[in-house]
Image 1: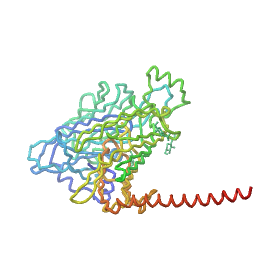
Image 2 (image 1 turned 180 degrees about the horizontal axis):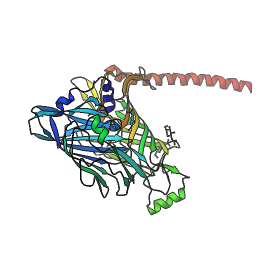
Image 3 (image 1 turned 180 degrees about the vertical axis):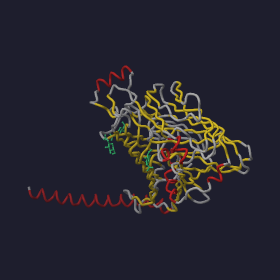
Amino acid sequence: MLRLWNAISCLLLASALPALSAQTQSFENSAIVRTIELGGSLVHVTTTFAVKALKADASVYTITIPAEEIYITNWLEVKVKGNQEPLTVTYSGSAGKAHNLDVSLEKPLEVGETINLVLETVQTHATWPWPPQAAQKEEQALKYQTPLFVLSPYITNVQRTKLKASSPRIISHTTPENVDDFTLENPVTKSGATVTYGPYNNVPVSANQEFIEKYQQSVQLHYSHDYTVLEVLKLRRSAEISHWGANLNIQDDIILHNAGPELKGQFSRLDYQTQLFYGSSVHHFLTSFTVQLPGGIRNTYYYDQIGNVSTSRLRTAPSPARGQKNAQSSVLELWPRYPIMGGWNYTYTLGWDAPLADSASYDASTGKYIVSVPVMTEIPGSVVNDAELTIILPEGATDVEYVGPFPAHSDELSTHVTYLDTVGRPSITFKYKNLTNKHVKPIYVSYKVPLTAHLRKPMAVATVLLSLFTFAMIARRVDLTIHKKTTKDV
Ligand SMILES: *[C@@H]1O[C@H](CO)[C@@H](O)[C@H](O)[C@H]1NC(C)=O
Ligand SMILES: *[C@@H]1O[C@H](CO)[C@@H](O)[C@H](O)[C@H]1NC(C)=O
Ligand SMILES: *[C@@H]1O[C@H](CO)[C@@H](O)[C@H](O)[C@H]1NC(C)=O
């Protein structure tokens, strides 16, 4: 896995690629099939490369991502078809508008040996509502644009691209030009919800400026989309670990945004009720959504700027058994107080407590606790533009170490002081941009809690109680004095 954003910064270090020409003849693509699943704020792209080695010991295969797509690609993984383990991918610079990624194969191929590589990417903010505004009763349509050809530093015998819309109501699609060199048939076909570009045959080496200038072009699809286009503008997650209460508290402060076409005109509750009643075209208003929370949670709370939202439904699953892989999730259905129309924001807070034992373990050999905290909870179909996760460790925790599932934009260890703390609690803050459903993974934090730190809390409580008690006594005396004084005065 690779965060392209981080990789881009290496661009300045990597020089132009003189090595590429040497590799050019190592492989040929027998076939490339790219399938684009069109969504709202997330678009999932799967590209399969049927590869044949032309040289012995060919072990590094280069994948090319066009400049138009590299900045919107926020998650990427390459696997051998049928394998679970992703291959190592490194950014190796760009040749003009073609950005190259080197995929290290597990073992070198022999001449004539074939392999199927599957590149999976998630693009964020790649679609846009068109028209940009829609009245309450109008349907929602989106546009998406992509370069026509999958570029490659190798010759490709045949390639095609399938765009799959969420409904067969495809309003328009581009017919490509200047593709006679690659096909004598229809350059594009539509069948149901799928538009297919290609097959295009005998495509030469294309990861170069000449090919791009001569043949590359954008194709666009305009399609009706029956789901809400959601973005989380801001997610602030705080995860507080308490050994004292054997508790892990997680709280999310969220600004959710309906990124579909902006509502044109006034919102009419009457029309809305009618639309709900007849079940007609209400897909692009957010009326409810469902999130999966861990099993074993308690004290779940959900409030917005007005107060408690009582219309949510929670089905709690039991705590996962130790070592259980596919633990059951609790399911929370959230019903905001009012429907969230296109262009509107919805700010809310969701939090819960979970038994610490469900996500913590103790390693006796190192004397350290290890706690896993998920980076985020998925809101289906939604991108998280900006996330900040703070993990607050127990008071007095030392030897803090952490490992994340992917690089954060920044991480920082600091001290967090709360009521009843005497020395403060270490906390770690992680910041992320453009998270997708592929980023729902845990961060592992390990630390030691010295025995004295365990005792410090009861000591603090005792001290506070003692001082309260003393204060009460003094207050009483003072009170008595005042009282006496007043009686005297009367
Ligand atoms: C987030 O993604 C958008 C497009 O999908 C991109 O323009 C933006 O630069 C990304 N932000 C960061 C910080 O990577
Ligand atoms: C919110 O509702 C829950 C359950 O109905 C209740 O226990 C809690 O005290 C309420 N919180 C506030 C702040 O009103
Ligand atoms: C939604 O929230 C964002 C971030 O706080 C803000 O910039 C934007 O103006 C808000 N939009 C509306 C319609 O309130």
